[in-house]
Image (tube, rainbow, N blue to C red; front, side, top):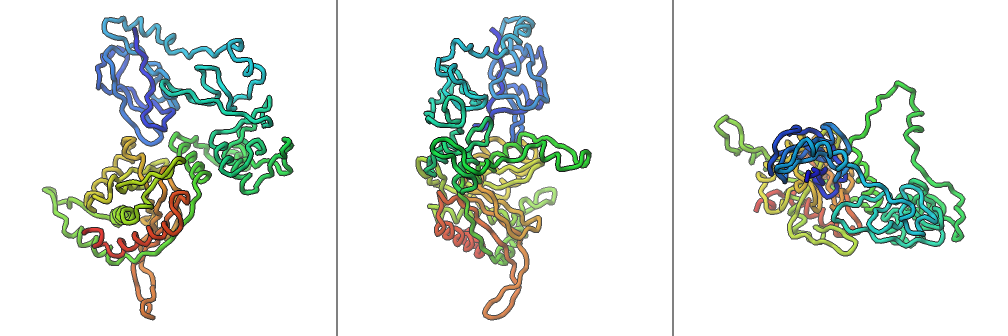
Length: 462
C-alpha cells in the first residue's frame, strides 16, 4: 500500500518546520538515501533523506510552505508494483486528519463540564489533551489533579505544568493565582508576579484580589500607538519566535546573578601576535590559521571549568550533571537571530584546533547548515561583543547551560601600578550564573581561574 512521507522531527525541540524546497518531483523514482527535500528548522536548513524505495506519487505540501507540523503527511510514496496514479488519487484520503471523538464517546466527567479551548484537562484514553502535542510512540500524559476552587468551569484550575511547578516551589496555592493566559489559564509569569507581590492573590474562597492581573498589551493596542503608514510590519519567523520563547523561559525559570572582572590582556595580545606570525603558508601564499582573542577566551574558560569542576555542571530537577569535559558554546550572529555551536571537549583542544573549528561553524551557521548535535547541549557559553566596541554587558543564560560569559572589547586603559599611572590593554568580562547550580563563591572561584589563564596565557598551553 502507499506510504505517507511525514514531516520529520529534525531536533528534539522541533514541533514544526518550513518545507523550503523539494529536490524530487512527482513521478520520480526514489531509493533509500536519496535527498527528498530541504527542511528549515528554527536554527538550520537540513536535508531530508528517503528511507523507503518507490515512486513519489503525490506531493501534499508544496515547497515554501511554513509551519508544517511534525508528523503531518507531506507526500505519498507508491511502493514497488503499485500504481502511482492510484496512490496519488488516494493521497488526500490517506492524509486526512482523524475525526474528533463525538460527545457520546467522551467520559461523563468531560461532558459535564468541558473546559475552554486550550485549557488542561484529562483526556479520553488514546486522545490528546487540548493544546498538547502527542506524537506516535510517546506515552500519554497522566491526568493532573484539579483543585476544588479554580479559574475555569466546574471548579477546575487551568494552569501550565511549568506554572504548577513554580507555584509548588514557592509554596503558593495555584488556585489562588489570577491567570492571564488564554481563557484565564495560570502561566509562569502569573506565578512570578504573585511571588514578587506584583499582583494580589485570590482569597481562599476564590474571590479575586484587589489588584487586576498584569497583562501584556495586545498587538492591536501596540500598533494603535503609532501612526498608520509610519512603520513596516515584518512577521516573526520561526527562529525569532523560538529565541523570544527561550529568553522568556530563561529569565522566568533561571535565577540569574552576575560577576564582573577586568582582565589585563597585554601578554595574550603578544602571544596571539607571535602565534599568528609563525603560521605556515599554503601553496597559494595564504596563512593556514589565524588565532583570535575569542579562541583564547574559549580555551581559558574550558581550562577554568576543569580547574573548578563543581562549576562545570548542568542543573536538573532530580540532581546535578557534573561533566567530565568542558563543552563550550559560542554565540554566532546570523541573519534574523543567533545560534550557539558547541566546541566539544574544548579543554583537550589546541588554540589552532579551536580556531579552525569555530571558523567552520561560523560559515555553516550563517548558511543554516549546522546539524542539531553541533549546537545542542554544552555546559557553558561565550558571547563576545567586543568587536562591536561594547565595553561591558550581561548575557542571558541559554538552557541547559549553567553559565554564560559576556566578553567586552579589549582596549587601552589607564591603570595604577605601584602608585603610578600606566597604560594597559584590558578587557571586561561578566559571568551570568544560574544560582541553582553555581553559588556566588563558586562562581567567583571560576572567574578567578579564568582571569589567571587569560592574563598568563602560557598556562593554557602547557
